[in-house]
Amino acid sequence: MNRTDLRLVQYSVTQKVKSKKSKKSTSKKVKAIGYFHIWGANADKKGNEKFYALIEDANTGSLVEVAHKDVRFLTEDEVEMLYNQTEEILLKEEAVAEGPAEEAKAE
Image (cartoon, rainbow, N blue to C red; front, side, top):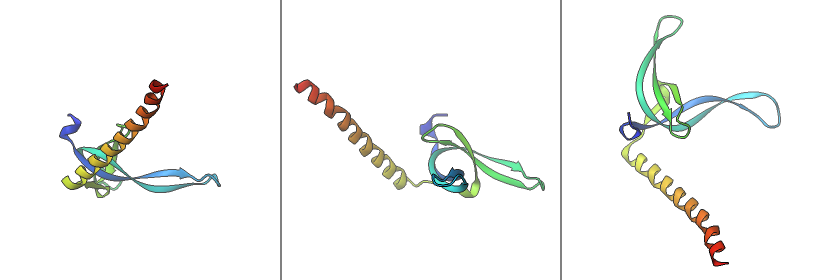
């Protein structure tokens, strides 16, 4: 399935983070953007079904199982806003990359 066919979602995962000052690790909930693939269900130790979503991380491309309660589908307006922000960032990076090349040609 192409990425263009998949819906964009915002999801939350718990990551362990080590603080710089102490060597203790703490759990922190991190929000990220990804592509929704499919719903699934697993049985827990008691035999109850737990629903999850299989999501492809937009930055890394890795697949992540996320609890259904930690998934939020983005609206068309939110998707358009993300697209515009990404486009602005890419244009700025392109301008910065072209700046030194133009100076070298002038010399």
